[in-house]
Amino acid sequence: MTRNNHLVRRLGIIGLTATGICSMLGASINVVPFMIQRNVEGIGPYVLPAFLFAAIPAIFAAFAYSILASAMPRAGGSYIYASRGLNPYLGFIASFSQWFGLSIVIGVIAYIIVPFIRDVALGMEWNDMAKSLEMGIVRVPLALLLVWTFVYVNIRGAKSYERTLIPLMFLMFGLGFIVIISGFVYDHSDFSQALVGLEIRSIPQNANADFSWVTFFSASALLFSSFIGFDSIAQAGGEAKNPSKSLPLAIFLAISIVGSFYFLFTAAVYHTVPWSFIAEEAMNKDISAPGLLSYLLPTGLGVAILLGAAIALINDLPAMLLSVSRLMFAWAEDGVFPKVVADVNSRFHTPHIALVGSGIIASLGVLGSHFAGDFFLGIDIMVTSMMINFLLMCITLIALPQVNPKLSKEIQVFKNKGFQKVIGWGGSLILIFFLIIHLYKDMNSEVEAWYFHSTWIWGIVMILGSLLYFYQIISLKKQGINIKKLFSELPSE
Image 1: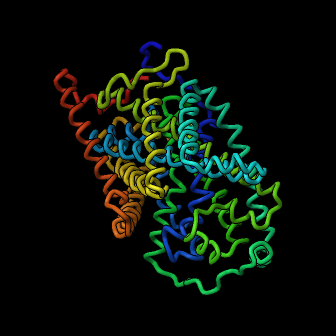
Image 2: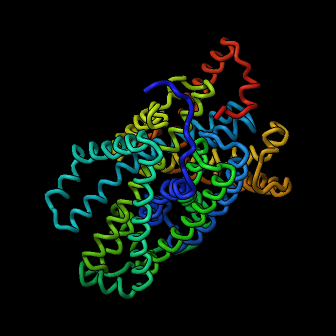
Image 3: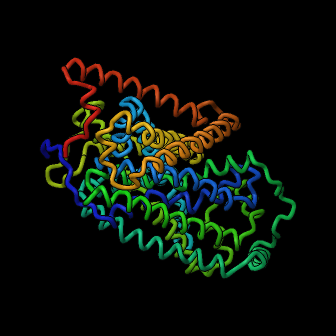
């Protein structure tokens, strides 16, 4: 390994789109739409409308990302866009928030994969194996092994990455369609009969279904997490082939495919399983789509959808590791992070130091999930981070023509300035609204200690990030580097 600060453009449109899709699908499709009945009590039958409402800010953010990506196709996407088109500090602090949130969630996802593997083992009647997977001494090391396996896959380069990710993505969709087809074949009466036959119990009838705008908006803010992930395509901008066209196209393919699949998947489960049953179960234990449909499906199909859920979660890991490591690489290239992090493996052309660093933070996420006992804390941190990040992307789109007119002229898609302003202002306003709702919900939730409020954790991380940024900037100035020039130009290829 030698110092060689140049990535290689080897990721094609399929690899880029798979990166976005696999970053978006996972816990958000198999767990969140059902556990939301506990996290946002009272949402009841309004999960699907809340999901559709959550798509609105995501669509605005996708347009903003696509426009900016076409003008600034470099590794570290969101950091590059905001630091060149808005303000260097805001660019770093927003991406630092994003990096921390996503890195923690990588660990969270690795941790919740293990119960899905356990359920597959139960379905196969490997009872001893399933019992061992419930033990912390087994679950934690296995989650850490998953994290570091995909750190290694990423270090091995684009070919290794695509050969791992793309087949798993198609397998995930294939197994996921079993849920969609099954969900629309059966209905509530079928589920009720199966429940009586298996557990001699009936569907709860007296659940509260009153509509509340506060509850609806709170649920939408959380379901917004379902659309987080397409930004990982932008982070790979330094390795995309024909980036000015492939990056925007991959972003829209990813968000369109995932949005449609997610809606069909969730609608199918609620078509079969009454929401009142889901709400009651969520209050008592962790639930998932495969677990809910297991009341109806034959053992073989039940195991298949459990395997699909596990693969969906596993797919998150390589794609998200690529995303967060490229942020670290971009910071180091600019000198606002230790330069050693910008080292590129001379054989595989990947930022191996950044990948290892991301793996370390993800490992903390595994440990945090184990000791906190609630994975929604990690998801809440990610949602806060990404809402602010998406908001700054929309503001950057508004500010770019004034802050950096040279780069503004490089925009290759949606060149109409009026359309850009609509996206920028519309996205900013609705994301501010979502952010207020999300922060209000978090700060008014009842938790055991202050550090279980994601807002406080996010604020502490921002303080640490700010201290790091200003320390590095002072160091750069002492070296005689022209800070204004540094942040007015794109990093060299």
